[in-house]
Length: 305
Image (cartoon, rainbow, N blue to C red; front, side, top):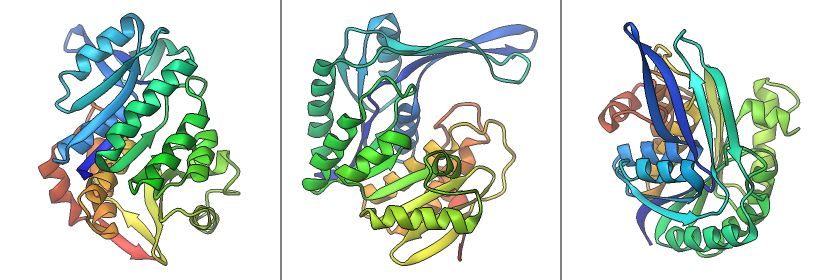
């Protein structure tokens, strides 16, 4: 086991975005999905990372080729059904969906192969990040429970950035750190409303399920953290928002990068908050320079509740 991170991203997607550059349209084609964005930020923070994915069809071929340019290790399982994709038009400054498809559900053989690959890479790592698929119908939550249980039983710290049935699955399997948004807690029925008291109560319920630490993101408000008997607000440095999407994924990546090398929870929260804040200043999801994240860390305020 080494100070590296395995990111489990069973169903990444191909992202195609049309933007306006001066007087001409500009086309951007990238690999996407929560796990891809998380792996990108972890790598930017200087921690070795391996991304485990399943790819298929023409979109999968493109995603595989693009992942080869990301600068981190990739273990890909071939699947028969095509990888998901989306086409977005941002020429007027807003993100309009032209067309999208989440991909077909992974078959039993695909799930078994992906479990074995992720388990192998997870056992070689000190931290495993379990990220969700772009479409909830693509991956059976039972795969998450099995993988979380196997990794936890073998001493790997599992970090989950999940909600709904996927969060329930990893709670059954075993998870050390949970990052979840306040909207997801409300949607899952764990929190009655978006008040701090209600959200902290939901966080305590997760701790009662065996989780070591919980981080609740709250869009533009300070995040809430619960760990080692502490309950606190995590205030990011004030930065102007350019693209709000991906901040939560960068936050999770920042936390995982610190936990992988044995850092403290306070350092993990500062790094996660700084990484999330930096991400909103950029168009690319999961992007940002590690040196900028480290500079912003001292400007993160952690205040007890």
